Image 1 (cartoon, one colour):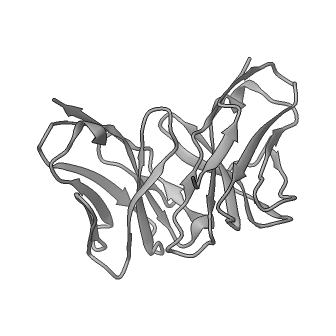
Image 2 (image 1 turned 180 degrees about the vertical axis):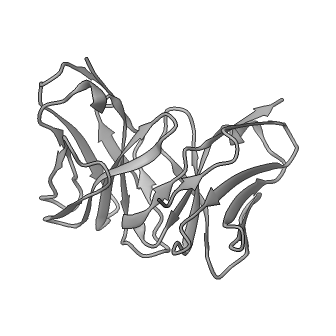
Amino acid sequence: GESVGLHLPTLSVQEGDNSIINCAYSNSASDYFIWYKQESGKGPQFIIDIRSNMDKRQGQRVTVLLNKTVKHLSLQIAATQPGDSAVYFCAETRNNNDMRFGAGTRLTVKP
Amino acid sequence: EAQVTQNPRYLITVTGKKLTVTCSQNMNHEYMSWYRQDPGLGLRQIYYSMNVEVTDKGDVPEGYKVSRKEKRNFPLILESPSPNQTSLYFCASSSSMAYNSPLHFGNGTRLTVT
């Protein structure tokens, strides 16, 4: 069946370094992808999204890259800060009713 | 402040005792949804509602009920809870099902059924 998955369940980086969180998807019909951040004790929070007609989208300190050839999505966080420590989810969808979430990657930022 | 509010945050109950988890949003959103989050499984959709009086099953609806009598409220009802419903539950809303309408999540309800 179709699924959304993550390459690594945990990622540890040094404060100030760049972080890269990866996600693989298998549903070729998905055309919209989202990254969410979930801090301890809170619900997921929208970070950035990208449509399938784009390869790259940048936000404030975050960049999402989409490689449709290998069905791969990544989230890059520049100059990672302690406040970036959280679980990050990718999600794929064709509309909000058909959204599939990955299991999440836990990012830990070391001071 | 725009938000999705769930209550209670924590709930411990016994098998078979009916319970309701409330969800309310103050953003006038049409779309609302319930998810459960379990280790290693990610978020799985239980039920969703595209508007008042319109609800549909998600991926894991068994053992749950919902209602959407008002636009702002979308309670999740467990008529006869069982231990396999022990989980972390999230309510979410968005203005529509369009692409540029990200989901807004509540802070979760951690349910334990003994």
